[in-house]
Image 1 (tube, rainbow, N blue to C red):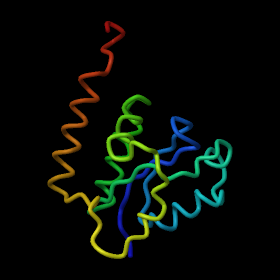
Image 2: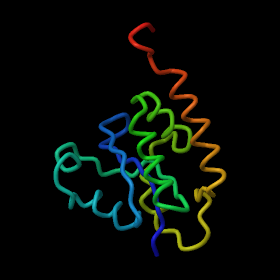
Image 3: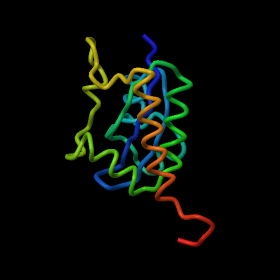
Image 4: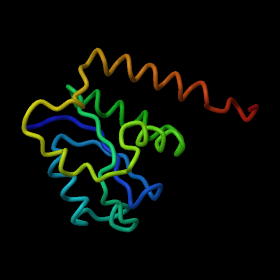
Length: 130
């Protein structure tokens, strides 16, 4: 079953972070965990699934991925810690077969993205004047 998702994996608590998007979170989490993906992820050992959001459409998931990637490291850490303060590996929760409480409805996702974008914009330096 395809379920658009944006996720963050880490090498360790407060370690290297990678933000990605997928339509199959259980498979992608397994690939990270087993080191099956080459490049950045393998080089930096990003194997721990520390955050994810499920979206109704891939367009929504990609937009959210870009928003997260565009934010500061501090904002990414705050996002992770808001839902996973102990930095537990969420690999097992990515295999839920029933209704998933982290599924974000499109209208909720739009409101959430706007709220988070406002937060990113408000804290972004303006032309080096801040």
